Each structure stands twice: as C-alpha cells, then as structure tokens.
Image 1 (cartoon, rainbow, N blue to C red):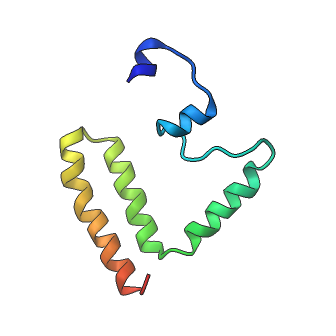
Image 2: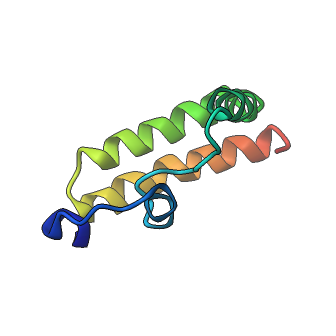
Image 3: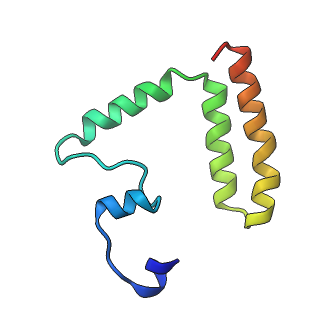
Length: 87
C-alpha cells in the first residue's frame, strides 16, 4: 500500500522483498532461469499445478475473507493428490 499511495519508486531487490515479483535474476539470465522454473513446475503432478493456478486466479478476483474460504479446499485437494502421487 505504501508504494501505491506515495508513488515512491523501488528497485528490483525491493520489489522481490515486498512480493511484487517472485524472483530477481541477473541481466541476461532471465531465459535460463525461466526454463529452470518451467522444468521444476513440469515435474509436479499436472492436477496439482492446475489446482494451484486455480487457487491463485480465484484469490485475485475475490475479496479477502472469501479468499481464505475458497482457497483452503483447493490447496487441501492439491496436497492430498500430491501425497497420493508420493510427492
């Protein structure tokens, strides 16, 4: 909220620290890192990845309190499925 209301600029490291971006990589290493992340995602069960994406997308479109109620069952299903896959 601070940065939105003050219009103060911030650098990549601060963006990572406050959660605006997930990861900061060195200039020129973006593609290599993206492929590494894609490989890590691809190793997970497809249903778990789909459930995770669904949970994130639903939460982005929902007010805060209903987010917790909606997200919990989706994450629980994902964890149960992953455990049944032995992961």
